[in-house]
Image (cartoon, rainbow, N blue to C red; front, side, top):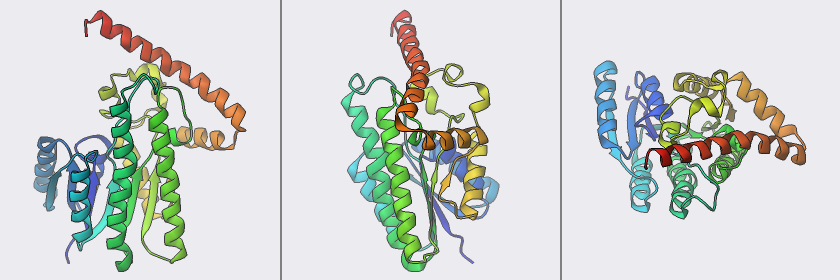
Length: 276
């Protein structure tokens, strides 16, 4: 019997790469990211270890032509069983201080690309009444802070988008499943790329491994859970934040933002000292 295909964007590292490793044993894979060398190395590892058929698709999902290419690929794959929208990045700095280009790219990558790819995937899956979509969101969809305005806004959109899809599929009694995965602080290249110190962002007890995040997601997928927030601390945080009156929540978020602001200032000072 032919294996189903799992398509993963942002598959070259972090949570995306871990999804690939966890799912390679029982599925064929379509790995999508900008860094082709990373994808090919991962594909070679997974083929050698699990004997899976792994296809690599180099794409920058902030570019219209690349999104269209991937969407066409998803729409035409008869064995598509799962799409994981995992491509993304973070930025630091106040909204008006950050470059407009970076904000624009973030919205394209976090909003427009998942929307287009999910549309293509569901047009494939729904008529077959089979499959699923995991949208990698964030705890930032529940708890905002200064310096992450666009990031939090796009992740809030992703939660709302996924919930809307859930309601539509439920109205059809469809077997297609959708999930918004909302991890908190996760060990990956994400914060390294931002050049932000993990130790200054949050205590070590709040940090989780990519393996733990993926395990929680796949358990939630089996249970058809709409929102998956890995880690009891993150679940407690999001549960409290969602119930606080707006005025009180804003005060809490402002306090949390001071830690981020100190780290941003510190990172700028270090660059000045280093002559960068």
